[in-house]
Image (spheres, rainbow, N blue to C red):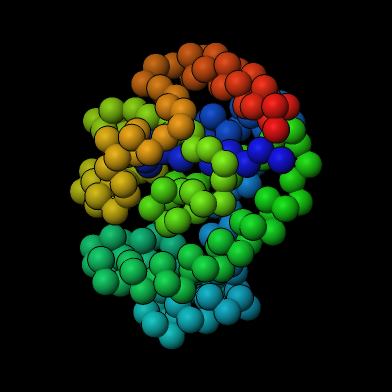
Length: 199
């Protein structure tokens, strides 16, 4: 099976792209969802996070307070690296399991850190959804109600735009409308189906 990685900086619209591919019956394995699975109550990663960072990063239900932890780790690179050391191996394991269960003509691994985390070696080719940085900031602030400083900190923790483009096998421009993105998604889908059929 052809394994396709889809990535892009925060606010680039990779979810809009993969949501459209899902409507065509393509299996989407989502690293953000896997990241939530591995820190559910009772999971070893959550216990390690509480030990490392303190119980104040758990809410009253015993769940991870993602907003508080995000604010902490994007201000302190050493803490972010500690968090990644706890979560990334478990996320990778979860993603591998889900990719093995995929049954569509090709499978997509959607991950914001595909290129940064080494997950790119789990796929045969990488698709980068690209938008100008100013548009990334605007869309993310509108979507997440985050202030510009936090969005810029998150962007600095991700691979820079030029490096992402250089490492991509395919670049999908998403600086226009959702309709324009869907048109590009359709063309991408046909390209990937052809690649999958060639083996």
